[in-house]
Length: 110
Length: 113
Image 1 (cartoon, rainbow over the protein chains, first blue to last red):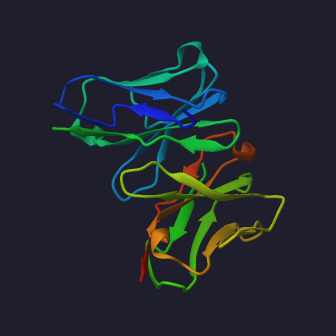
Image 2: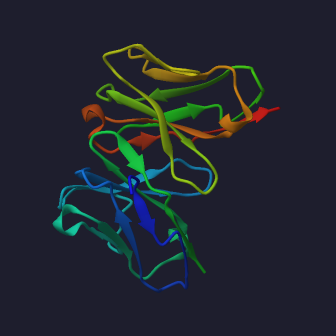
């Protein structure tokens, strides 16, 4: 597989529940980015990793959000105690150096 | 921090005509400017990019121009086709693209057959 893979593609959850998304980057890409995209807007940066090190976190990334990239391979993004405002498309991208985006995970909080 | 403004928000053109989308950025340290195409239900796909050491880049029907002094860059699509219909995003970053991108709000392009 030569693309960035995200799982699941869609997630519907009840408010207050925890959710976790997974991103599998292109194997030789050492940088991995998470973005959030709401309807009618451009992607907004959340956080990024170089290998296993988390280099930067946006102010958008509240305490309820956590991201990991163990062993510098796949990454997970967890949202605890989901709120309706968390409903969005969560995009993962990897780069070395050209950035390639995955198809995204669409989260709906009801 | 960086702020990227994109215009217009919607654009309709007749098939075969040209389309131009413009972006301005605020951070003079930005040096990498990609353009992405996003189709419904899909992630953004890079279509062309330009670095601050060049003023213009072309790839078949797509071209990008950069004016560093004015801090604006534009996407030009010639001989538009219905399959060009999508949302287009401009973005900017420092570090030659190795730092997080700041995106514009997007332009919805409709090519009318």
